[in-house]
Length: 410
Image (cartoon, rainbow, N blue to C red):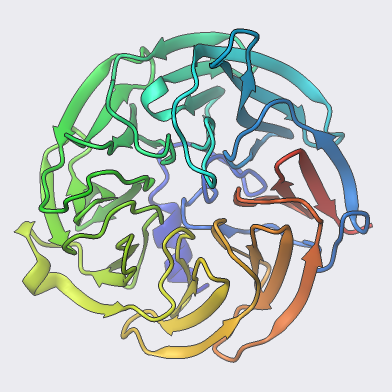
């Protein structure tokens, strides 16, 4: 990644982290990059596994790693039929030992999807606080000893397929999308108290309103913007008050999942089902910018679920089918497209010159980040994996449907 791109990406951060931390979905930049070194290229269920810890309950939230601790969420079946305990977990990153396990909400189980869970949004950990989110079930803040500081379960909406999108921090706000079956909106809570600060409706022509994307905080022409895809359009909002700045439409696209990335003056998004497209949008406009600010689109190889990955001048895509693509980020020209694995939901990661892809069958594929296709390794662990990686110096953390793994060269 070029130096200028690194400066731009780190300028988006609103909190203090260190290089080895992975404090939110897709890492400290929110764009899938890590500065970690000495990461393993090869592993299996036994090779280069530092530890493997069974996890209570079930969930597809990705792990986050801060100051030698791992945080994630899970849903544990309760004794009463149809009820569950939504919980936050903390593990020691060195040993895999569970240090605490705190209940956040006791709720009824809601209808989900075979590729979703009751605990899919990834936590945030910044400045000594852990923020967890369970979609329509509520949000909470904990200290790093597991004590609940506040909870908010007042933002109700009709979920479709359960919860999915992760929250972000924008200054003193915890921001997340609430795109249910009807009347979708985006909301911001005060990160100190949990009180609602603003709530903005999202109105588009899309017939199906539900989506699951995680927003991205950017700075455009010295103005902070929250970029947030929804069904039918991608929106930019002013973090101060939730005011819409601009939007770019994409028709009937729904169930939008990929988190945006930003670089070269372009925002790269996925447009969702039923015909996924990658869209590159110039984010400097006002109002409806569809006709003036869409730089290029690409349908072949576009993902429904995995987020795009921008590395230097190249945009890397992983389709849900397991076909990976390398695309010129400025023009959309395809350098290569190759099938590298089976069905994939996790978002790819870039670290130490390599791209890491995890498929749903537990296969971890390592590619060279380059305009020429080079597959370096394919690593099975034999356990279903839909969550995305967490990364720290020397190690990858992979959440399976039963265990959390620390993958590290021995």
